[in-house]
Length: 244
Image 1 (cartoon, rainbow, N blue to C red):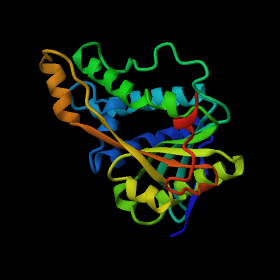
Image 2 (image 1 turned 180 degrees about the vertical axis):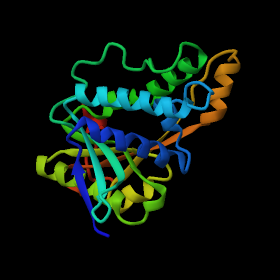
Image 3 (image 1 turned 90 degrees about the vertical axis):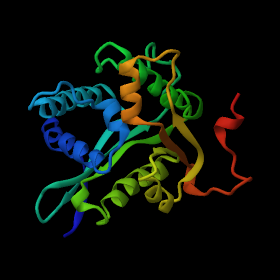
Image 4 (image 1 turned 30 degrees about the horizontal axis):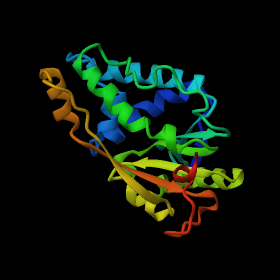
């Protein structure tokens, strides 16, 4: 059953991709899904309603961001999408003008849970503003349906970005979970450090404690592929460590 990577070209394709994103990140549980796609409410339609809301919001983000490129992997025998990714392609410094309110999770209701997510986003995205100041590619998300893993879909999605980075002559970044790291290791990305997202506040209330327990300490591996993909420990210049 051959697989093919296609760039998403129409809004209608998000109808297929976002439910696929959810089920992929639910098995196994990925706390970053909850950060960006919380289930709102508790009724019988809460999950379906939340998927619809996240689909509309992510589509809006995609439309508004010229760097955003969504891909899907299609099983050519069935025509079904079995995996997807979002690559951001930056031809210049994306933080030349820092965003005014970069860490506000407005899609969460006001309260301690949103405060927790705001701080987690700051701990996650803040380092990008120091490290990713040159033209580069960033793999923002990559997912494959649980029933179709180990068929090569993830490799195709990563290879698409590597090819693009080499064509442009730029760096490539991934912030990986533990589950995704072996895939990026096989493609030659180097782990530069680990980040633990662990928001804290004095005297947290029940809402804060609830979301803290649900998400737990969130670990990310900050991974880098230098221009051309060749890295030598102690020899390769790490740009963000030398920039003024």
